[in-house]
Image (cartoon, rainbow, N blue to C red):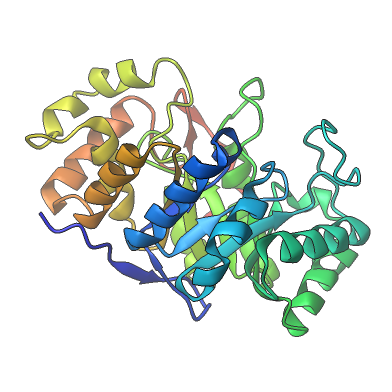
Amino acid sequence: MATKLLKRKLGRTDFEVTTLSFGTMNLKYLSEQEAEKLLHQVLDLGINYIDTSRAYGNSEERIGRYLSKRRDEVIIATKCGCNPHLDKRGSGHVLSFDRPTLERNLENSLRALKTDCIDIWQLHGATPEKLIGGVAGEVVEFMQKMKQQGKVRYIGVSIRHGPNTEPGYPSRYGYECIQEYPEWGVFDLFQIVYGGMVRTSEDLLQYAADRGAGIIVRGVVRDYFDNFSALFAKARLNQLLAEGEDRRAFLIRYALNHSAVSSLLIGTNHQEHLKTNLIAASQGGLEVDRYLEAKKRFAQIGSKPGFLVGGIQAESLTKVTS
């Protein structure tokens, strides 16, 4: 079976990204030797997009330490607006969207990653109301200025999913933001929760892509609630699995059927999981008949466009639905 990943255009950027990308949120839990081995394996397998953040412990430092000599093989996306407390150990994960925080984040990211330019620079979890002045405020102005100066190539937003104690977790924020942000016309990319089990923003992804934005999706295989396996079985989705295919591979392939999606962001600290994710992604989307039937069965458990987990209808903004 071929395991070479296909590439897709990332919105209006000049990047072509592999359909599977690698998230490094948990890289901090590995030893130095393990981290080095895993990062090199990511590139050796052909994955060309790595996502990190100032909030991910020593993730940026490890990427810079071990991959700086392979810089031309990888698109590096990192995030800003996080941990503004002078990088003090144990300061906790704090978000602050203002120019001084972003300026300091960028300086530290460039230094840690051992690069003179960030490929994709994203606001970490910002919703529109958190950005004072909106599209004309200091945050967007500063991000655009850094883009003009060549310190970052493209700018975007990694949209938060919020804590599981909030209504609409994990897809409400993504659903709301993906309706408003594209209208601003300044962000080149959005990272958003999406997958077969969380289809809330499925129709809106094309809405953003039609306005030139690249779409990176996360949470594709994540069990956001304890009953996800039971729901999958209740919808008789197990009957749609091909021989030798598990639920994880099925969900990966389902998400790849969406033409607006450039890449699936999946993080793991296990080399074997990385390989199996790659094998699934290399097969591309599901066959048409299986995909259409999967949509029907996901809908039976309340996973459908415009609906939050649990079958609760999400509120729509007039400018999208009218």
